[in-house]
Image (tube, rainbow over all chains, first blue to last red; front, side, top):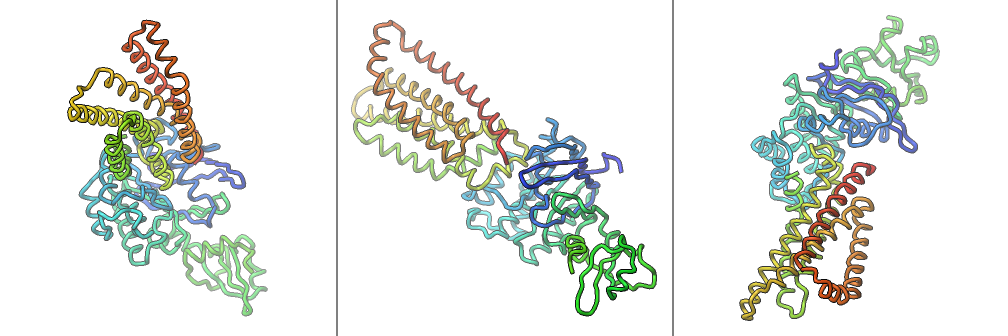
Length: 287
Length: 204
């Protein structure tokens, strides 16, 4: 896929902290799609989002966002086209949603006040209540409303749905889905709630301890893996590369297997993204 | 950058009301150096704004918006400049009104004194703000109070001698005022450059 067809391109991106290293990340987000970043706490998801926005400096690699290198002076203008929701909404606590709207009107050239008011109404956010009196869910909803109200082409969402109740989460995910109906719009979303990602993502990237373990089209991933239940002896006869993870119990072994690498005689069950991620995270250690 | 100033305005609205009350109370007290206190208070506005930013981690969010490091730094300087300028205008108006009430006309000396104090406020901002961006609000505020104490101490120690020296040297007050204005502009230009460099390299 050529660079121009991607909203984000990460090439050999590295970032070193004391006790943590983001190792040579290569990742692309095709335009018009949603990429979900999954990983445990401290896996590097937030670091990747901060590197993409050039909020933190890097220790190597190239990042291209909406056709512009993120360390070039032109990237400042590209930020107009990016809506960001961080793990918490960092608005000054004395501001009301209405005042946040005024601040953003003077921040983004393409700020759409009507669109913002609609989101406030839709997400049930009181416009004149100080931010400090909002619940965590309301704070995140406000951050999402702001991110969507300046006609962005790209959304970067870091745990944007955490702290929201299932009904609101569903509503928000629907908004994200609507956003990518325009094929020039793309979303990079990190979340612990894998079921949310399964609902909306086209691609899934799994990070573990700063390394990109996999980046695959979601449907291909779900198609490629299956759950097989068998005895330990049967498992031992499978080629090692066919088994992505296993879980032993008193009745046998439950294994995540690559369907194309096992004999056709072995029956597999359809699996979920959450199960795949759990098995991959624990690997063979999960006994 | 206008957005940043609007944000600071909303954040500081309560402080500004308190500030107005403070100035009005001071203006009715006899023998108070109104302009000096007003400017010291106004020069603290950027510190308070930075404290709010620090508490809400606004910088992390603003870094994802179309703001440069220079915008972030410059907005705090502008807030300080506006605060000091507003203090000078307010002091002028209060002294004018109290003069009218007491049937004492507003003198040119009073006007020059307000301008001197205004410049001193700008110099205070120029010296203090790099410390705020370098050390953070808590330590930066301590530096601010040390600077104030030092200025008052030096003023008390050398004030009369300086006044005598000016009288003997035949240098006009206007020339001194011009030099102070030039010094405050130069110091602020250097200060903004230092603050922007410090802010850019701040770990996030």
